[in-house]
Length: 521
Figure 1 (cartoon, helix red, strand yellow):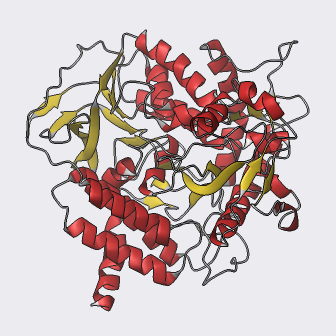
Figure 2 (spheres, helix red, strand yellow; figure 1 turned 90 degrees about the horizontal axis):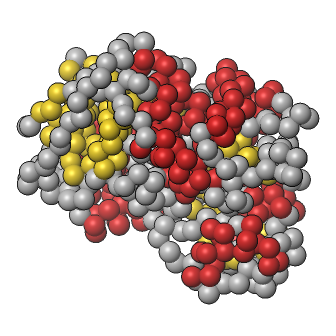
């Protein structure tokens, strides 16, 4: 296989964590692996709510940490929650200095939104529902202007180059043409910041490329994966037939929007004291139950926002308009969709994975912050905090030296994923590893994943998807309780006390999958 050597730090991904880490590493040389043009196809750019941070004098990092721990349902690492929430304010101020146009009041204070399970309005936003896109735009402008950062657009990582448990580089393929032959890029360190796994599901809010590949490539290299069973389903994805589903931001419920069904019934009040602002897992299961019962759930913003939704929440308004919905005069149909993966590549508090010379930040990681159920708008915050932490850790072993940009050209010879196999995998995950799970469905999913994998071994990208899908399903099968976003209708109760985080290698998961396949034969 063709090999390119460089002394640059290799960053896989082009979302918020990747961009922020690259800037924090400057002037150390960095090469970013971006499947698309910067700003396109990254989950961070699609984030609507904003960044959670205790910015108001009446709020505190301690309160933010307490809400994070409570939402995580006994699974949050309290030390990590303290670390992240204490740093939150500094990162908002830094993003402001970098050019992010956060919404401000006339006297200059940050406009704060309240989202589910927060005890205070502490979500800093941009133009209502444009936080992700605007933060990304500000960071991209800085990255483009930073000489030490090279961006390889149109490339994707499909494997890690590992020798004696030490990561030396990545295996690349053209993202524009997956038929290209792979090549090895070796660098001084590797940071994975390439997104989560939501796109493994048929009903998702994630960009099309975010299908668990980064977690899968690390797992296939032997990295430990933590909390894989905990997938968050956003309760208010728009049920309009689009793939991916547009998101109706949680900030709308923070404004006072209510959830009803096609009978006009408001159903959340009977299920939780916080009604529409209950934790996401509670609301998602309620939405799912309404859908399963044929009572189409809807988000009603008419009374609290009326015509104002069209100017205050432009992304929601645009999605409504292209689907023939006028949210000022009619409710928005919604469904629970795969949105965020709390699990991922296990890291320590310096962002290090179990493999040497490998760091991870953002949704591909599992730091212990989110537990069983991510607190709203903590995702972007975690990406920021750990991007800086990873950059500082990497900088300890990488000198500030100038290097020439590398030139990457691909030759013919690769195998792209079979679209039909990908579609079947995604439908399997939604049907059997979704909002509500049980042993029968999870075993069915594992047998289907095994069969799809056996029929598509030539595509490494697809093998990364099936690796992550296998880890999610096995971890879900192993956890014989319901906790946070993980709901088992055959084990509806929650174990008492603090939960035990799951840790798996792909080797462990494949052994369990193999046994399940044997039982069925």
